[in-house]
Length: 469
Image 1 (cartoon, helix red, strand yellow):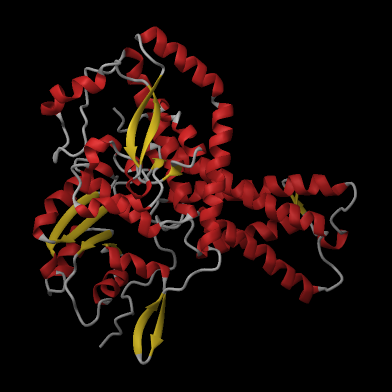
Image 2 (tube, rainbow, N blue to C red):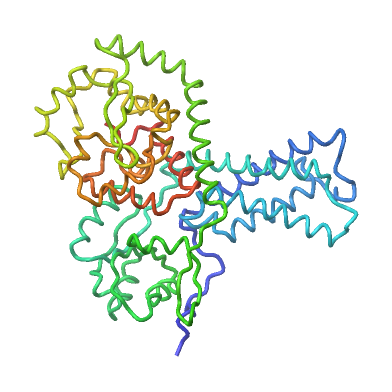
């Protein structure tokens, strides 16, 4: 009998989930970021603290041998951390910054054992260290923004779905409409552990399996190991309780397997850093965008009579009502006309109000909405502490009055200018349930890195006007 962990087809290098082109571009971008940081550091230190000749073994492309050692180790460590392969890791900017720091700190240990009297100047070391974090992270953000838009980098990954019968149709439509994945087969959850399941998955040619509500079994990882041995990825749609597992560590307690979830030392500071960046980002944004604000104000005045700004009561933290500001993109009597347009509401459950071709929009309003420029005045709401740069989108009183009880969980955090459901479909989301599930996922999975991911994707959507009306 074969060990469940033993694959029939061992592979030295797995095919990256994100595609070879994207992986190579990311790798070259990382090397470029490190090179820029080292060039700057070496020029700053050359006049008063140059690199010792004993560490200058050779030179390639104008960069010292020591740089290439650091670059190789960093790229190898990045590859080990799946920053060039896993869809879930290549956007993990915070972990990438931590990995760079570990490489530099490890170099101190290595240099000490190599020769305690010989090491790089401290000024060069720290300049290269912090410069590498800044340059690599910035280039990663830019490369991410560009790669996500290029059709050349999008591969139609074949995915197999295992879910309850009532959810299969919805999941197939959602995946094919919102992602670059192609559904190649489906199976009802109750049959996930049957003898016919794996042959059906293998025959479909799937590279990933998406599973929801798998039945209880004595060995929960059985399906995972069988898929892993076939080089097929597994993606689970978790319950809210299961989402907590990612924040904990497996631990045997009193002879029982448990998940230990501790209060992390820097968790409070991570949120305070987010709030600091909210304030600084909003302040800088207002100053930088001031000329645009003036131009838009003139355009609105020329487009239709009425005020430049529009404010509406929205529901924020803990259900508190506040006035959210926008550039006016509709005629001044838009709210009075909404009752007559309710019958045209395209939202399936009627909770959110949306019409693709809303007759109330003024000529310039279509441009403002497509580019999301109409949302920019909410930077003032961020300055006042009523909103954040990233968080669940605050909804009008009319919408919230139609909520089910569980929808109100989204009000436990500060609302944001952008959020998960703005980058996952925006106006294309059909029901409040779809939006609320994304908001609850955001709350359960919140991290500073997740905010960065959402901001990058928001920039891409704003630039190319996807899903806005």
